[in-house]
Image (cartoon, rainbow over all chains, first blue to last red; front, top):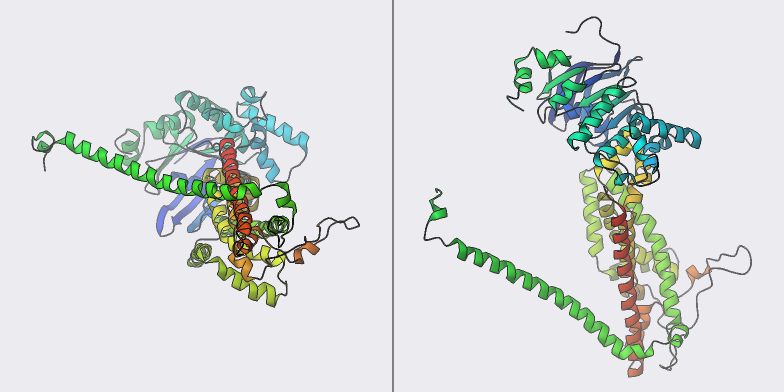
Length: 259
Length: 311
């Protein structure tokens, strides 16, 4: 399906099925996640794309009735993060996530970014301060907040809050960064800033992003996966998937005939 | 049906709207009257108690022990007793109730068993308080030999208000949005870290409100305290909790006999001399004011915390 010059694998989904109670949400899905690339998951509402994203950090384990089968392998050691013997907390310490709606803690900006470090028992102040500054810089928020690090994070604008959530996720150097519709609650200007930021971040991070916005996928993502009714219909380079889709359903979706 | 009905002559929409608005108005009046009834009762109670009891409220009334002479009788042992019992009640009910609430809301998986427990907690809140008194008499006084002491009363009232603390704790925890919890979990925090760093601090206003409301209920409880055999005439104070010699803290007071404000009030009311009834009214006034102050404090705390938190 892809040329032999594909970049390195960072993770790989293999025959993943997921059900919630008696409801099957994802059926036998396989796809690669490439290092330092952005992979977008698109598809109509209810197709299972957010569910798939939340498999990567075992978020479903928080709620009963969730059942996985298949594997999500984390490269290079090919660790199956869905294995029941792997602690979901360990997985979440390695894979960061940013949610649909900005969800800063009602604490200071500094404490928000430092939280992931504190959770891990890191106490050294100089290290924490250094990481907080660096993460805020990487999230392109530093200039906005450097004079008010100790003011409440909830006073920031929506776009700033979302960048803060990105900084919070980056502070612990995750191996993969999951973004769940990171701009759907934001205005167009903030959306543009976040998109620029995401494109910048892929230099250092591997990103998997759910989006409802097809333009966003084609603009920012290197690879795009189209999902429909819990199945992966098509996975390809974004430029190919959006210009010459192989599957009729993909074409119907990206041309706006449904969804 | 077709859309002709909207333009038909026989159906008068304006009249119908007038009728619908009248119903609206009638309900708002009925609602306001119901509210006024509750408020007027409270005000009448306050005025009535004040008119008889207010003149008895001087410093002596608070610093005198009960006496067979009504003009010399005071509520010193009663208010100290109430204070000590409330303190013990809080120490018993807060950790137990908050821990149970956290467990039910955050840890327990939803199953028929937890549902059964939840149902029973709600039932427990509705059990007549005298039943708790009987249970305490059998368990604390006779079986555990704790005597008719402050400790027994504190434990009894603690158990009595435990369901209220549990239920209000759970309600407070539920106000913390799922998105904030997920944010913490996604960063690799454990359940306890999520609770301790986020859920509890953000809901502590609601929890404190619940605790105060439960204590304001406990402070007026009479039946279970009488059942466990609290004395109605006490002319001495419990041992002091702080002493002059090491280790400076004494728990002797926990096993001391005691009386509380509502019992003192009940005792005075049951006397034939009208002068004692004045004392009872004054005590009632204090109880009423205490309850009002505690509830106002609870509302204030909730307001402060709500203002501080935005999601």
